[in-house]
Length: 78
Image (cartoon, rainbow, N blue to C red; front, top):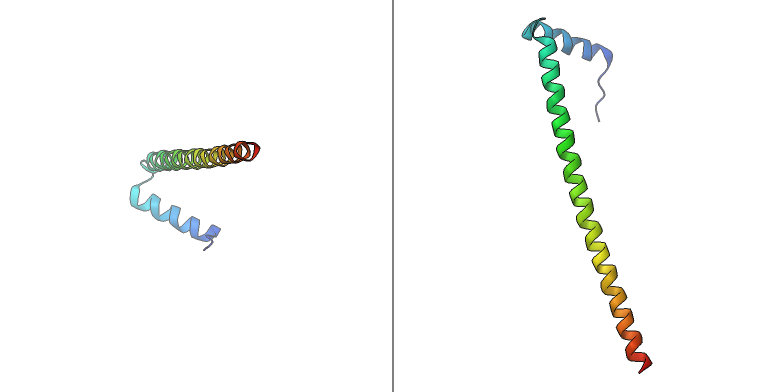
């Protein structure tokens, strides 16, 4: 994974200030921050949904295994 050093960050910020302008730069940063927050929230929601689905699947499989064990035990007892 490439690393970004302080010099690269300084160059990117300087170019952004020159291109966007010093007045609109804070507004742009807030907008980018809100987009990043929205994306993080969306990814977190997707991860939670996938996790809950896998937990439900695991629980269902365990319940099936328990039911089979109980049925086999009942058959062996008779």
